[in-house]
Image 1 (tube, helix red, strand yellow):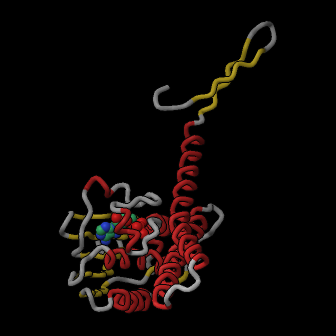
Image 2 (cartoon, helix red, strand yellow; image 1 turned 120 degrees about the vertical axis):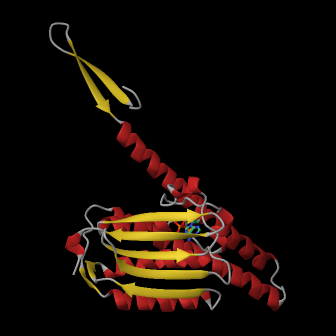
Image 3 (cartoon, protein in one colour; image 1 turned 90 degrees about the vertical axis):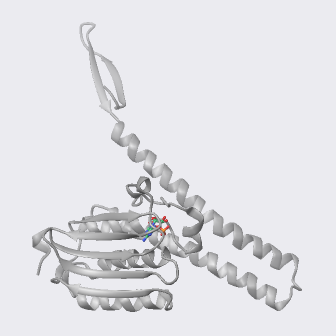
Length: 259
Ligand code: ADP
Protein backbone atom coordinates (compact mmCIF):
# COMPACT_ATOMS: atom_id res chain seq x y z
CA UNK A 1 0.00 0.00 0.00
CA UNK A 2 1.53 3.26 -1.10
CA UNK A 3 2.63 5.82 1.54
CA UNK A 4 1.38 3.72 4.43
CA UNK A 5 3.27 1.74 7.00
CA UNK A 6 1.70 -1.59 7.82
CA UNK A 7 2.70 -4.15 10.40
CA UNK A 8 1.78 -7.63 9.26
CA UNK A 9 1.31 -10.42 11.76
CA UNK A 10 0.95 -14.07 10.76
CA UNK A 11 -0.94 -16.09 13.34
CA UNK A 12 -1.05 -19.90 13.02
CA UNK A 13 -4.58 -21.23 12.86
CA UNK A 14 -6.06 -24.72 12.88
CA UNK A 15 -5.31 -27.24 10.14
CA UNK A 16 -2.02 -25.64 9.20
CA UNK A 17 -3.86 -22.55 8.03
CA UNK A 18 -2.74 -19.06 9.02
CA UNK A 19 -4.41 -15.73 9.74
CA UNK A 20 -2.87 -12.58 8.36
CA UNK A 21 -3.45 -9.51 10.53
CA UNK A 22 -2.39 -6.08 9.33
CA UNK A 23 -2.12 -2.97 11.47
CA UNK A 24 -1.90 0.42 9.79
CA UNK A 25 0.55 2.36 11.99
CA UNK A 26 1.05 5.34 9.66
CA UNK A 27 -0.97 7.70 11.84
CA UNK A 28 0.47 6.48 15.16
CA UNK A 29 3.99 6.87 13.79
CA UNK A 30 3.24 10.35 12.48
CA UNK A 31 1.91 11.46 15.89
CA UNK A 32 4.90 9.84 17.55
CA UNK A 33 7.28 11.71 15.30
CA UNK A 34 5.51 15.02 15.95
CA UNK A 35 5.78 14.42 19.69
CA UNK A 36 9.49 13.62 19.42
CA UNK A 37 10.06 16.73 17.30
CA UNK A 38 8.18 18.86 19.80
CA UNK A 39 10.22 17.59 22.74
CA UNK A 40 13.47 18.02 20.82
CA UNK A 41 12.58 21.59 19.81
CA UNK A 42 11.32 22.55 23.25
CA UNK A 43 14.45 21.16 24.95
CA UNK A 44 16.67 23.04 22.53
CA UNK A 45 14.74 26.28 23.06
CA UNK A 46 15.02 25.95 26.84
CA UNK A 47 18.66 24.95 26.80
CA UNK A 48 19.82 28.08 24.99
CA UNK A 49 18.71 30.63 27.63
CA UNK A 50 19.76 28.28 30.42
CA UNK A 51 23.28 28.11 28.99
CA UNK A 52 23.47 31.91 29.05
CA UNK A 53 22.22 32.09 32.65
CA UNK A 54 24.65 29.38 33.80
CA UNK A 55 27.51 31.14 32.03
CA UNK A 56 26.89 34.41 33.88
CA UNK A 57 26.44 32.60 37.20
CA UNK A 58 29.84 30.97 36.73
CA UNK A 59 31.38 34.37 35.99
CA UNK A 60 29.74 35.79 39.14
CA UNK A 61 31.23 32.94 41.18
CA UNK A 62 34.71 33.12 39.62
CA UNK A 63 34.96 36.92 39.66
CA UNK A 64 33.21 38.20 42.79
CA UNK A 65 34.88 41.64 42.50
CA UNK A 66 33.43 42.61 39.13
CA UNK A 67 32.55 46.24 38.73
CA UNK A 68 29.01 47.09 39.77
CA UNK A 69 27.98 48.33 36.29
CA UNK A 70 29.25 45.13 34.62
CA UNK A 71 27.44 43.01 37.20
CA UNK A 72 24.20 44.92 36.58
CA UNK A 73 24.60 44.27 32.86
CA UNK A 74 24.98 40.54 33.48
CA UNK A 75 21.93 40.53 35.77
CA UNK A 76 19.86 42.27 33.10
CA UNK A 77 20.79 39.63 30.53
CA UNK A 78 20.00 36.82 32.96
CA UNK A 79 16.59 38.31 33.72
CA UNK A 80 15.86 38.53 29.98
CA UNK A 81 16.79 34.91 29.45
CA UNK A 82 14.74 33.84 32.47
CA UNK A 83 11.76 35.72 31.01
CA UNK A 84 12.29 33.94 27.71
CA UNK A 85 12.15 30.55 29.43
CA UNK A 86 9.02 31.58 31.27
CA UNK A 87 7.28 32.75 28.06
CA UNK A 88 8.16 29.49 26.41
CA UNK A 89 6.86 27.34 29.25
CA UNK A 90 3.64 29.35 29.42
CA UNK A 91 3.07 29.00 25.66
CA UNK A 92 3.76 25.26 25.82
CA UNK A 93 1.24 24.85 28.64
CA UNK A 94 -1.36 26.92 26.74
CA UNK A 95 -0.88 24.85 23.60
CA UNK A 96 -1.14 21.56 25.46
CA UNK A 97 -4.35 22.71 27.15
CA UNK A 98 -5.89 23.90 23.88
CA UNK A 99 -5.06 20.59 22.20
CA UNK A 100 -6.49 18.31 24.85
CA UNK A 101 -9.85 16.99 23.69
CA UNK A 102 -11.41 17.20 27.10
CA UNK A 103 -10.85 20.93 27.49
CA UNK A 104 -14.23 22.39 26.66
CA UNK A 105 -14.75 25.81 25.14
CA UNK A 106 -16.56 28.01 27.65
CA UNK A 107 -18.38 30.70 25.75
CA UNK A 108 -19.97 33.98 26.67
CA UNK A 109 -20.91 37.05 24.70
CA UNK A 110 -17.63 38.65 23.72
CA UNK A 111 -17.66 42.42 23.89
CA UNK A 112 -15.58 43.05 20.78
CA UNK A 113 -15.40 46.80 21.30
CA UNK A 114 -13.93 46.39 24.80
CA UNK A 115 -11.59 43.62 23.75
CA UNK A 116 -10.14 45.43 20.76
CA UNK A 117 -9.98 48.74 22.66
CA UNK A 118 -7.76 47.06 25.28
CA UNK A 119 -5.69 45.44 22.55
CA UNK A 120 -5.10 48.79 20.90
CA UNK A 121 -3.86 50.26 24.18
CA UNK A 122 -1.49 47.34 24.70
CA UNK A 123 -0.28 47.58 21.11
CA UNK A 124 0.52 51.27 21.52
CA UNK A 125 2.38 50.53 24.74
CA UNK A 126 4.42 47.78 23.07
CA UNK A 127 5.17 49.91 20.02
CA UNK A 128 6.12 52.91 22.17
CA UNK A 129 5.08 55.28 19.40
CA UNK A 130 7.31 53.63 16.80
CA UNK A 131 4.32 52.64 14.61
CA UNK A 132 1.08 54.20 13.51
CA UNK A 133 -1.63 51.87 14.78
CA UNK A 134 -5.29 52.23 13.82
CA UNK A 135 -8.46 50.35 14.80
CA UNK A 136 -11.75 50.10 12.97
CA UNK A 137 -14.76 48.19 14.33
CA UNK A 138 -17.83 47.60 12.20
CA UNK A 139 -19.21 44.17 12.98
CA UNK A 140 -21.36 42.27 15.47
CA UNK A 141 -20.36 40.76 18.81
CA UNK A 142 -19.96 36.99 18.81
CA UNK A 143 -20.17 34.11 21.26
CA UNK A 144 -16.77 32.86 22.24
CA UNK A 145 -14.17 32.71 24.96
CA UNK A 146 -12.94 36.23 25.63
CA UNK A 147 -9.60 35.19 27.18
CA UNK A 148 -8.75 32.82 24.34
CA UNK A 149 -9.70 35.34 21.67
CA UNK A 150 -7.71 38.03 23.48
CA UNK A 151 -4.66 35.80 23.37
CA UNK A 152 -5.16 34.91 19.67
CA UNK A 153 -5.84 38.45 18.46
CA UNK A 154 -3.12 39.76 20.79
CA UNK A 155 -0.59 37.37 19.26
CA UNK A 156 -1.39 38.58 15.75
CA UNK A 157 -1.09 42.23 16.79
CA UNK A 158 2.16 41.61 18.69
CA UNK A 159 3.61 39.87 15.62
CA UNK A 160 2.59 42.77 13.39
CA UNK A 161 4.53 45.13 15.68
CA UNK A 162 7.53 42.81 15.98
CA UNK A 163 7.89 42.27 12.26
CA UNK A 164 7.28 45.87 11.17
CA UNK A 165 10.16 48.31 11.19
CA UNK A 166 9.83 51.67 12.95
CA UNK A 167 7.59 54.14 11.17
CA UNK A 168 5.37 51.38 9.74
CA UNK A 169 1.58 51.13 9.80
CA UNK A 170 -0.61 48.56 11.51
CA UNK A 171 -4.34 48.42 10.90
CA UNK A 172 -6.60 46.32 13.14
CA UNK A 173 -10.10 45.69 11.87
CA UNK A 174 -13.28 43.88 12.90
CA UNK A 175 -15.90 43.74 10.21
CA UNK A 176 -18.86 41.78 8.90
CA UNK A 177 -18.08 40.13 5.57
CA UNK A 178 -20.07 37.86 3.26
CA UNK A 179 -18.32 34.85 4.85
CA UNK A 180 -18.93 36.03 8.43
CA UNK A 181 -17.42 38.33 11.05
CA UNK A 182 -13.73 38.85 10.45
CA UNK A 183 -10.78 40.06 12.51
CA UNK A 184 -7.76 41.27 10.59
CA UNK A 185 -4.37 42.81 11.24
CA UNK A 186 -2.60 44.40 8.31
CA UNK A 187 0.98 45.54 8.66
CA UNK A 188 3.47 47.27 6.41
CA UNK A 189 6.28 45.12 7.73
CA UNK A 190 8.95 42.76 6.41
CA UNK A 191 6.42 40.35 4.86
CA UNK A 192 6.81 36.60 4.34
CA UNK A 193 7.99 34.69 1.26
CA UNK A 194 5.26 32.49 -0.23
CA UNK A 195 7.00 29.17 0.50
CA UNK A 196 6.94 29.83 4.27
CA UNK A 197 3.29 30.81 4.59
CA UNK A 198 1.74 27.32 4.78
CA UNK A 199 4.16 26.30 7.55
CA UNK A 200 3.86 29.32 9.85
CA UNK A 201 1.35 27.72 12.21
CA UNK A 202 3.64 24.72 12.86
CA UNK A 203 5.09 24.74 16.34
CA UNK A 204 8.52 26.41 16.46
CA UNK A 205 8.48 27.22 12.74
CA UNK A 206 10.12 30.57 12.10
CA UNK A 207 11.24 32.29 8.96
CA UNK A 208 14.22 33.85 10.69
CA UNK A 209 15.21 32.27 13.98
CA UNK A 210 17.56 34.98 15.16
CA UNK A 211 15.10 37.78 14.47
CA UNK A 212 12.31 35.95 16.28
CA UNK A 213 14.57 35.44 19.31
CA UNK A 214 15.57 39.08 19.35
CA UNK A 215 11.92 40.01 19.58
CA UNK A 216 11.30 37.57 22.46
CA UNK A 217 9.27 35.25 20.22
CA UNK A 218 8.70 31.66 21.31
CA UNK A 219 7.80 30.29 17.88
CA UNK A 220 4.52 28.98 19.32
CA UNK A 221 2.34 32.08 18.85
CA UNK A 222 0.70 31.17 15.55
CA UNK A 223 0.21 27.54 16.62
CA UNK A 224 -1.79 28.89 19.58
CA UNK A 225 -3.73 31.26 17.30
CA UNK A 226 -4.63 28.40 14.97
CA UNK A 227 -5.93 26.24 17.81
CA UNK A 228 -7.98 29.00 19.40
CA UNK A 229 -9.59 29.82 16.05
CA UNK A 230 -10.26 26.15 15.32
CA UNK A 231 -12.10 25.83 18.64
CA UNK A 232 -14.20 28.84 17.63
CA UNK A 233 -15.08 27.44 14.20
CA UNK A 234 -12.90 30.09 12.56
CA UNK A 235 -10.06 29.86 10.08
CA UNK A 236 -6.78 31.74 9.76
CA UNK A 237 -5.83 33.16 6.38
CA UNK A 238 -2.47 34.77 5.66
CA UNK A 239 -1.72 37.11 2.79
CA UNK A 240 1.78 38.45 2.50
CA UNK A 241 4.36 39.88 0.19
CA UNK A 242 8.03 39.96 1.14
CA UNK A 243 9.21 43.49 1.76
CA UNK A 244 5.70 44.93 1.59
CA UNK A 245 3.77 43.58 4.56
CA UNK A 246 1.30 40.96 5.73
CA UNK A 247 -2.36 40.59 6.57
CA UNK A 248 -3.54 37.95 9.02
CA UNK A 249 -7.29 37.28 8.87
CA UNK A 250 -9.42 35.31 11.32
CA UNK A 251 -12.69 34.45 9.62
CA UNK A 252 -15.59 33.33 11.80
CA UNK A 253 -18.08 31.57 9.61
CA UNK A 254 -20.40 29.67 11.88
CA UNK A 255 -23.59 31.62 12.31
CA UNK A 256 -24.20 30.02 15.71
CA UNK A 257 -21.42 32.21 17.08
CA UNK A 258 -23.28 35.34 16.04
CA UNK A 259 -25.08 37.45 18.56
P1 ADP B 1 7.36 33.94 16.94
O1 ADP B 1 7.25 33.84 18.42
O2 ADP B 1 8.66 33.49 16.41
O3 ADP B 1 6.90 35.27 16.42
P2 ADP B 1 4.94 32.86 15.75
O4 ADP B 1 4.38 31.49 15.76
O5 ADP B 1 4.10 33.95 16.32
O6 ADP B 1 6.34 32.80 16.45
O7 ADP B 1 5.29 33.24 14.24
C1 ADP B 1 6.05 32.31 13.46
C2 ADP B 1 6.88 33.04 12.43
O8 ADP B 1 6.02 33.68 11.47
C3 ADP B 1 7.73 34.17 13.00
O9 ADP B 1 8.93 33.71 13.52
C4 ADP B 1 7.93 35.05 11.76
O10 ADP B 1 8.98 34.53 10.98
C5 ADP B 1 6.62 34.86 10.98
N1 ADP B 1 5.65 35.96 11.19
C6 ADP B 1 4.59 35.97 12.03
N2 ADP B 1 3.90 37.12 11.94
C7 ADP B 1 4.54 37.88 11.00
C8 ADP B 1 4.30 39.19 10.44
N3 ADP B 1 3.27 39.95 10.83
N4 ADP B 1 5.17 39.62 9.48
C9 ADP B 1 6.21 38.85 9.09
N5 ADP B 1 6.48 37.62 9.58
C10 ADP B 1 5.66 37.13 10.52
